[in-house]
Length: 346
Image (tube, rainbow, N blue to C red; front, side, top):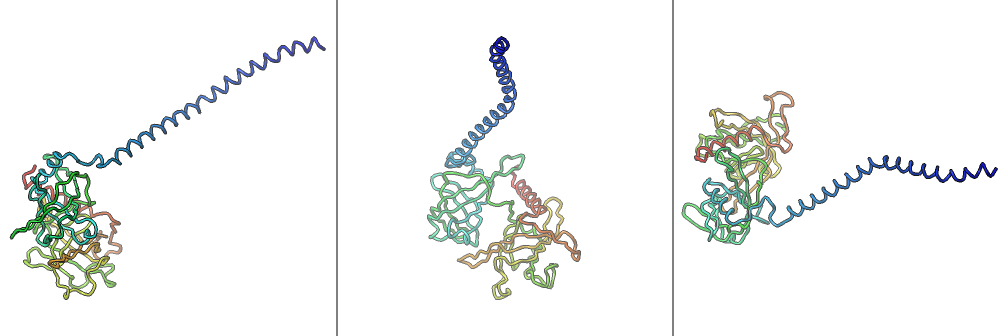
Protein backbone atom coordinates (compact mmCIF):
# COMPACT_ATOMS: atom_id res chain seq x y z
CA UNK A 1 0.00 0.00 0.00
CA UNK A 2 2.88 2.40 0.69
CA UNK A 3 4.13 2.48 -2.92
CA UNK A 4 0.61 3.49 -3.98
CA UNK A 5 0.14 6.18 -1.35
CA UNK A 6 3.59 7.74 -1.58
CA UNK A 7 3.22 9.19 -5.06
CA UNK A 8 -0.20 10.47 -4.04
CA UNK A 9 1.37 12.39 -1.16
CA UNK A 10 3.81 14.08 -3.56
CA UNK A 11 1.13 14.96 -6.15
CA UNK A 12 -1.42 16.43 -3.71
CA UNK A 13 0.41 19.72 -2.89
CA UNK A 14 1.10 20.41 -6.58
CA UNK A 15 -2.54 19.88 -7.50
CA UNK A 16 -3.67 22.19 -4.74
CA UNK A 17 -1.19 24.86 -5.85
CA UNK A 18 -2.41 24.80 -9.45
CA UNK A 19 -6.01 24.88 -8.31
CA UNK A 20 -5.26 27.86 -6.02
CA UNK A 21 -3.68 29.94 -8.80
CA UNK A 22 -6.47 29.03 -11.23
CA UNK A 23 -9.07 30.11 -8.68
CA UNK A 24 -7.20 33.35 -7.93
CA UNK A 25 -6.99 34.22 -11.62
CA UNK A 26 -10.72 33.53 -12.05
CA UNK A 27 -11.58 35.63 -8.99
CA UNK A 28 -9.51 38.60 -10.27
CA UNK A 29 -11.28 38.58 -13.63
CA UNK A 30 -14.66 38.49 -11.87
CA UNK A 31 -13.64 41.37 -9.58
CA UNK A 32 -12.36 43.68 -12.35
CA UNK A 33 -15.79 45.00 -13.41
CA UNK A 34 -17.25 45.82 -9.96
CA UNK A 35 -13.89 47.23 -8.90
CA UNK A 36 -13.86 49.57 -11.92
CA UNK A 37 -17.43 50.69 -11.15
CA UNK A 38 -16.51 51.31 -7.50
CA UNK A 39 -13.47 53.43 -8.43
CA UNK A 40 -15.57 55.42 -10.91
CA UNK A 41 -18.27 56.13 -8.31
CA UNK A 42 -15.69 57.22 -5.75
CA UNK A 43 -14.13 59.57 -8.33
CA UNK A 44 -17.52 61.07 -9.19
CA UNK A 45 -18.33 61.60 -5.51
CA UNK A 46 -14.98 63.31 -4.90
CA UNK A 47 -15.43 65.62 -7.91
CA UNK A 48 -19.01 66.43 -6.84
CA UNK A 49 -17.92 67.22 -3.28
CA UNK A 50 -15.17 69.53 -4.55
CA UNK A 51 -17.63 71.27 -6.89
CA UNK A 52 -20.18 71.83 -4.09
CA UNK A 53 -17.47 73.19 -1.82
CA UNK A 54 -16.29 75.67 -4.43
CA UNK A 55 -19.88 76.71 -5.25
CA UNK A 56 -20.76 77.30 -1.59
CA UNK A 57 -17.55 79.21 -1.04
CA UNK A 58 -18.27 81.40 -4.04
CA UNK A 59 -21.89 82.16 -3.17
CA UNK A 60 -21.22 82.66 0.54
CA UNK A 61 -18.70 85.43 0.02
CA UNK A 62 -19.79 88.92 0.91
CA UNK A 63 -21.32 90.27 -2.27
CA UNK A 64 -22.08 87.31 -4.49
CA UNK A 65 -20.72 86.94 -8.01
CA UNK A 66 -23.78 88.73 -9.47
CA UNK A 67 -23.01 91.83 -7.42
CA UNK A 68 -21.26 94.96 -8.65
CA UNK A 69 -18.83 96.27 -6.02
CA UNK A 70 -16.41 98.35 -8.08
CA UNK A 71 -17.15 102.08 -7.44
CA UNK A 72 -16.45 103.04 -11.05
CA UNK A 73 -18.80 100.33 -12.35
CA UNK A 74 -21.50 101.40 -9.88
CA UNK A 75 -21.14 105.00 -11.08
CA UNK A 76 -21.33 103.81 -14.71
CA UNK A 77 -24.55 101.85 -14.10
CA UNK A 78 -26.17 104.76 -12.25
CA UNK A 79 -25.13 107.19 -15.01
CA UNK A 80 -26.75 104.88 -17.57
CA UNK A 81 -29.92 104.77 -15.47
CA UNK A 82 -29.89 108.57 -15.42
CA UNK A 83 -29.52 108.78 -19.21
CA UNK A 84 -32.40 106.33 -19.68
CA UNK A 85 -34.58 108.22 -17.18
CA UNK A 86 -34.98 105.11 -15.08
CA UNK A 87 -37.62 104.92 -12.39
CA UNK A 88 -36.51 103.58 -9.01
CA UNK A 89 -39.08 101.51 -7.14
CA UNK A 90 -38.35 102.59 -3.57
CA UNK A 91 -39.42 101.12 -0.24
CA UNK A 92 -38.38 101.56 3.36
CA UNK A 93 -36.86 98.68 5.25
CA UNK A 94 -38.29 97.39 8.51
CA UNK A 95 -41.44 98.74 10.11
CA UNK A 96 -42.11 101.28 7.38
CA UNK A 97 -41.89 98.81 4.52
CA UNK A 98 -45.64 98.25 4.21
CA UNK A 99 -46.85 101.83 4.33
CA UNK A 100 -44.03 103.67 2.55
CA UNK A 101 -43.63 102.35 -0.96
CA UNK A 102 -43.32 104.64 -3.98
CA UNK A 103 -41.62 105.15 -7.34
CA UNK A 104 -38.99 107.88 -7.71
CA UNK A 105 -37.51 109.61 -10.74
CA UNK A 106 -33.72 109.70 -10.90
CA UNK A 107 -32.64 113.36 -11.04
CA UNK A 108 -28.87 113.26 -10.53
CA UNK A 109 -25.94 111.09 -9.45
CA UNK A 110 -23.27 113.11 -7.66
CA UNK A 111 -20.26 111.09 -6.43
CA UNK A 112 -19.44 113.52 -3.62
CA UNK A 113 -23.05 113.90 -2.48
CA UNK A 114 -25.35 111.02 -3.39
CA UNK A 115 -28.22 109.86 -5.59
CA UNK A 116 -31.00 112.45 -5.87
CA UNK A 117 -34.48 110.93 -6.30
CA UNK A 118 -37.61 112.95 -7.02
CA UNK A 119 -40.55 111.64 -4.97
CA UNK A 120 -44.05 111.35 -6.49
CA UNK A 121 -46.60 114.08 -5.91
CA UNK A 122 -48.57 112.10 -3.34
CA UNK A 123 -45.49 111.52 -1.16
CA UNK A 124 -43.93 114.33 0.88
CA UNK A 125 -40.52 113.55 2.46
CA UNK A 126 -40.28 114.17 6.19
CA UNK A 127 -37.21 115.08 8.29
CA UNK A 128 -37.66 111.78 10.14
CA UNK A 129 -36.76 109.97 6.92
CA UNK A 130 -33.11 110.97 7.23
CA UNK A 131 -30.88 108.04 8.25
CA UNK A 132 -33.61 105.53 7.40
CA UNK A 133 -32.56 102.82 4.93
CA UNK A 134 -34.42 102.35 1.67
CA UNK A 135 -34.19 99.61 -0.95
CA UNK A 136 -34.38 100.71 -4.58
CA UNK A 137 -35.08 98.53 -7.62
CA UNK A 138 -34.40 99.72 -11.17
CA UNK A 139 -33.35 98.51 -14.59
CA UNK A 140 -31.18 99.56 -17.52
CA UNK A 141 -30.88 98.30 -21.09
CA UNK A 142 -28.12 95.80 -21.80
CA UNK A 143 -27.66 96.82 -25.46
CA UNK A 144 -28.86 99.55 -27.77
CA UNK A 145 -29.88 97.21 -30.61
CA UNK A 146 -31.48 94.20 -28.93
CA UNK A 147 -33.53 95.39 -25.95
CA UNK A 148 -32.78 93.21 -22.95
CA UNK A 149 -33.17 94.56 -19.45
CA UNK A 150 -30.62 94.33 -16.66
CA UNK A 151 -32.27 94.54 -13.25
CA UNK A 152 -30.49 95.94 -10.20
CA UNK A 153 -31.31 96.77 -6.61
CA UNK A 154 -29.45 98.29 -3.69
CA UNK A 155 -30.00 99.40 -0.10
CA UNK A 156 -28.70 102.67 1.27
CA UNK A 157 -29.65 105.32 3.88
CA UNK A 158 -31.33 108.63 3.11
CA UNK A 159 -28.80 111.34 3.96
CA UNK A 160 -30.72 114.50 3.03
CA UNK A 161 -34.06 115.91 1.84
CA UNK A 162 -34.66 118.63 -0.72
CA UNK A 163 -37.80 120.75 -0.75
CA UNK A 164 -38.85 122.69 -3.84
CA UNK A 165 -42.00 124.44 -4.94
CA UNK A 166 -42.53 122.08 -7.86
CA UNK A 167 -40.90 118.85 -6.68
CA UNK A 168 -39.44 117.31 -3.53
CA UNK A 169 -36.53 114.91 -3.51
CA UNK A 170 -34.54 112.64 -1.24
CA UNK A 171 -30.78 112.21 -1.36
CA UNK A 172 -29.67 108.60 -0.97
CA UNK A 173 -26.09 107.60 -0.25
CA UNK A 174 -24.32 106.06 -3.22
CA UNK A 175 -24.40 102.31 -2.51
CA UNK A 176 -21.28 100.25 -1.98
CA UNK A 177 -22.82 97.38 -3.91
CA UNK A 178 -25.39 96.80 -6.65
CA UNK A 179 -27.12 93.42 -6.69
CA UNK A 180 -28.52 91.85 -9.84
CA UNK A 181 -32.13 90.73 -9.86
CA UNK A 182 -35.64 92.14 -9.83
CA UNK A 183 -38.21 92.20 -7.06
CA UNK A 184 -41.26 91.55 -9.18
CA UNK A 185 -42.10 88.49 -11.17
CA UNK A 186 -43.54 90.56 -14.04
CA UNK A 187 -42.58 93.72 -15.84
CA UNK A 188 -44.75 96.67 -14.81
CA UNK A 189 -45.80 99.76 -16.70
CA UNK A 190 -46.97 103.17 -15.58
CA UNK A 191 -49.59 103.63 -18.31
CA UNK A 192 -50.14 106.79 -20.28
CA UNK A 193 -53.65 108.23 -20.50
CA UNK A 194 -54.34 106.66 -23.89
CA UNK A 195 -53.07 103.17 -22.91
CA UNK A 196 -56.12 102.13 -20.85
CA UNK A 197 -59.22 103.87 -22.23
CA UNK A 198 -61.64 102.27 -19.76
CA UNK A 199 -61.76 100.39 -16.46
CA UNK A 200 -64.86 99.20 -14.56
CA UNK A 201 -64.88 97.56 -11.14
CA UNK A 202 -67.56 95.39 -9.50
CA UNK A 203 -67.25 93.81 -6.04
CA UNK A 204 -67.82 90.05 -5.91
CA UNK A 205 -71.00 89.15 -4.02
CA UNK A 206 -73.13 86.05 -3.44
CA UNK A 207 -75.32 87.07 -6.38
CA UNK A 208 -72.57 87.32 -8.99
CA UNK A 209 -70.23 84.41 -8.24
CA UNK A 210 -70.66 83.03 -11.75
CA UNK A 211 -71.05 86.30 -13.61
CA UNK A 212 -69.28 89.62 -13.49
CA UNK A 213 -71.93 92.18 -14.43
CA UNK A 214 -74.73 92.82 -11.97
CA UNK A 215 -75.90 96.37 -11.83
CA UNK A 216 -73.77 99.51 -12.11
CA UNK A 217 -70.04 99.19 -11.31
CA UNK A 218 -68.61 100.31 -8.01
CA UNK A 219 -66.16 102.59 -9.82
CA UNK A 220 -65.46 103.51 -13.43
CA UNK A 221 -62.37 105.01 -15.03
CA UNK A 222 -62.67 106.68 -18.44
CA UNK A 223 -59.65 108.38 -19.94
CA UNK A 224 -61.96 110.93 -21.62
CA UNK A 225 -63.11 112.22 -18.22
CA UNK A 226 -61.21 114.96 -16.43
CA UNK A 227 -62.02 113.59 -12.97
CA UNK A 228 -62.19 109.87 -12.17
CA UNK A 229 -62.89 108.01 -8.91
CA UNK A 230 -59.82 105.80 -9.50
CA UNK A 231 -56.45 106.40 -11.09
CA UNK A 232 -54.35 103.60 -12.61
CA UNK A 233 -50.79 103.86 -11.31
CA UNK A 234 -49.31 100.75 -12.90
CA UNK A 235 -50.22 97.42 -14.47
CA UNK A 236 -48.49 94.08 -15.01
CA UNK A 237 -49.40 90.54 -15.96
CA UNK A 238 -49.97 89.79 -12.29
CA UNK A 239 -52.00 92.76 -11.13
CA UNK A 240 -52.78 96.45 -11.03
CA UNK A 241 -52.13 99.30 -8.60
CA UNK A 242 -54.92 101.87 -8.22
CA UNK A 243 -55.28 105.12 -6.39
CA UNK A 244 -58.77 105.19 -4.88
CA UNK A 245 -60.26 108.67 -5.08
CA UNK A 246 -63.79 107.81 -3.97
CA UNK A 247 -64.60 109.48 -0.62
CA UNK A 248 -64.94 106.98 2.21
CA UNK A 249 -68.56 107.92 2.94
CA UNK A 250 -69.52 106.98 -0.65
CA UNK A 251 -68.14 103.44 -0.42
CA UNK A 252 -70.06 100.50 1.06
CA UNK A 253 -68.89 99.39 4.48
CA UNK A 254 -65.67 97.35 4.51
CA UNK A 255 -65.44 97.28 0.71
CA UNK A 256 -61.74 98.13 0.76
CA UNK A 257 -60.07 95.40 2.80
CA UNK A 258 -57.29 92.97 2.13
CA UNK A 259 -58.66 89.78 0.65
CA UNK A 260 -61.78 91.37 -0.87
CA UNK A 261 -62.49 90.11 -4.37
CA UNK A 262 -63.61 92.07 -7.43
CA UNK A 263 -64.37 91.84 -11.13
CA UNK A 264 -62.33 94.10 -13.41
CA UNK A 265 -63.24 95.01 -16.98
CA UNK A 266 -60.74 97.11 -18.88
CA UNK A 267 -59.46 97.90 -22.35
CA UNK A 268 -55.84 97.99 -23.47
CA UNK A 269 -54.88 99.93 -26.56
CA UNK A 270 -52.55 97.99 -28.85
CA UNK A 271 -49.19 99.79 -29.04
CA UNK A 272 -48.69 98.72 -32.66
CA UNK A 273 -52.00 99.15 -34.51
CA UNK A 274 -53.93 101.32 -32.06
CA UNK A 275 -56.77 98.83 -31.66
CA UNK A 276 -58.20 97.86 -28.28
CA UNK A 277 -58.47 94.51 -26.57
CA UNK A 278 -60.96 93.76 -23.80
CA UNK A 279 -60.09 91.91 -20.60
CA UNK A 280 -62.45 90.42 -18.00
CA UNK A 281 -60.61 89.43 -14.83
CA UNK A 282 -61.22 88.43 -11.27
CA UNK A 283 -58.93 90.16 -8.79
CA UNK A 284 -58.24 90.32 -5.08
CA UNK A 285 -56.86 93.12 -2.95
CA UNK A 286 -53.39 92.11 -1.78
CA UNK A 287 -52.11 95.38 -0.38
CA UNK A 288 -53.58 98.64 0.89
CA UNK A 289 -51.54 101.78 1.44
CA UNK A 290 -52.60 105.11 2.92
CA UNK A 291 -50.36 108.13 2.64
CA UNK A 292 -50.13 109.54 6.18
CA UNK A 293 -49.91 113.13 4.93
CA UNK A 294 -52.55 113.59 2.24
CA UNK A 295 -54.72 110.54 2.98
CA UNK A 296 -54.56 109.12 -0.53
CA UNK A 297 -55.38 105.43 -0.62
CA UNK A 298 -53.58 102.94 -2.88
CA UNK A 299 -54.91 99.45 -3.52
CA UNK A 300 -52.87 96.65 -5.05
CA UNK A 301 -55.03 94.16 -6.95
CA UNK A 302 -53.75 90.69 -7.82
CA UNK A 303 -55.32 88.94 -10.81
CA UNK A 304 -56.75 85.54 -9.82
CA UNK A 305 -58.76 84.40 -12.88
CA UNK A 306 -59.73 85.48 -16.39
CA UNK A 307 -62.81 84.88 -18.48
CA UNK A 308 -61.88 82.42 -21.21
CA UNK A 309 -65.31 82.20 -22.86
CA UNK A 310 -68.22 84.57 -23.55
CA UNK A 311 -70.67 85.47 -20.80
CA UNK A 312 -73.28 82.79 -20.09
CA UNK A 313 -71.20 79.75 -21.07
CA UNK A 314 -70.70 77.35 -18.11
CA UNK A 315 -67.22 77.09 -16.63
CA UNK A 316 -66.02 80.11 -18.56
CA UNK A 317 -63.44 81.19 -15.96
CA UNK A 318 -59.85 79.98 -15.80
CA UNK A 319 -57.89 80.40 -12.57
CA UNK A 320 -54.38 81.80 -12.76
CA UNK A 321 -52.95 80.02 -9.68
CA UNK A 322 -50.36 82.72 -9.14
CA UNK A 323 -49.44 82.98 -12.81
CA UNK A 324 -49.85 86.18 -14.77
CA UNK A 325 -52.03 86.89 -17.77
CA UNK A 326 -49.82 86.18 -20.76
CA UNK A 327 -51.61 88.61 -23.08
CA UNK A 328 -51.12 91.47 -20.59
CA UNK A 329 -47.47 90.50 -20.13
CA UNK A 330 -46.96 90.73 -23.90
CA UNK A 331 -48.78 94.07 -24.01
CA UNK A 332 -46.62 95.56 -21.23
CA UNK A 333 -43.43 94.43 -22.93
CA UNK A 334 -44.48 95.84 -26.31
CA UNK A 335 -45.47 99.14 -24.73
CA UNK A 336 -42.18 99.36 -22.86
CA UNK A 337 -40.33 98.67 -26.09
CA UNK A 338 -42.29 101.37 -27.91
CA UNK A 339 -41.58 103.95 -25.19
CA UNK A 340 -37.92 102.92 -25.20
CA UNK A 341 -37.68 103.55 -28.94
CA UNK A 342 -39.56 106.85 -28.71
CA UNK A 343 -36.87 108.08 -26.32
CA UNK A 344 -34.33 107.49 -29.06
CA UNK A 345 -32.37 104.89 -27.15
CA UNK A 346 -32.36 102.35 -30.01
